[in-house]
Image (cartoon, rainbow, N blue to C red):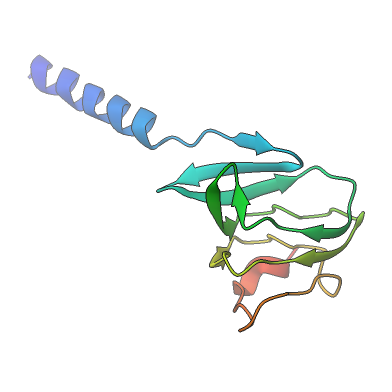
Length: 116
């Protein structure tokens, strides 16, 4: 019984350490990597017209994460590359009306991307 408990705890520890996400930074971007795809988690630049990169440190950017641009009042627009295939909840909260897409076809964003 004790051996089973130790095995269970060891298995959970290995799973959590293998699947944990650590934040990476590249320029003004903070991101995580899962399955060799990056997810933007925050932007720390000066604002203005922001262009999300298609790659960070050689890794394709596929997602804009939860609240990545929330309440960034200095941003006037966000250009979104074709590499983005999903976005998190509140990714652009408080930014409705000031961003634009530079891709064809337009990307169908998560319904909750703009909610506060």
